[in-house]
Length: 252
Image (cartoon, rainbow, N blue to C red; front, side, top):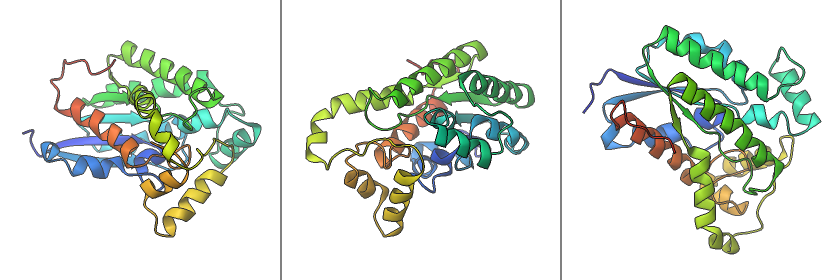
């Protein structure tokens, strides 16, 4: 068992904060095999990679032994409609008017460079999860582009790449028949309507899994956030990476 001083900084946005999504840090903390690790939640709802970069000092100050990075869904969402772009630029105080893939790559490279320069932590990128469960939708075509960029950065920087999106796609294909027993599948839409409705259902007493079922989804709750099965995939990937030998490859 690793010593109790092992700190894992989980860095990201709402999927990591875990207040509007099933909380994968809670799942990690429940696992007996990870009793020697302490999980620090560095997730902030609604952030893009650039926002995360601005608060990296706090992550570094915690002197983590491991860092997981899961941020970028909002970067993609900002490209999917003009309404989304304006909302993110305004409310996230972005220094650019058109957040795009090149800017995302720039910010992610800056994040990993600082972590490698200013900490001795082992670092892992998680691929970004699907946006909605229609794999042919333009949103998921864009997710694949951003994940290709993340995978390339992981290879170039010598960090791990944990294939969350790839596992989610495999799960949907394996459980395609289950979709027939659910209500009509909620479709992605821009703005905050889907998210707001899911939060309201959860506040009324439904679990995130029950919200997911009501919306006809297998892994997501509102096309952006995760039910317990989706969050469990993150926990599985992170758990394996933490207890694997340092040189073992965990990517696909």
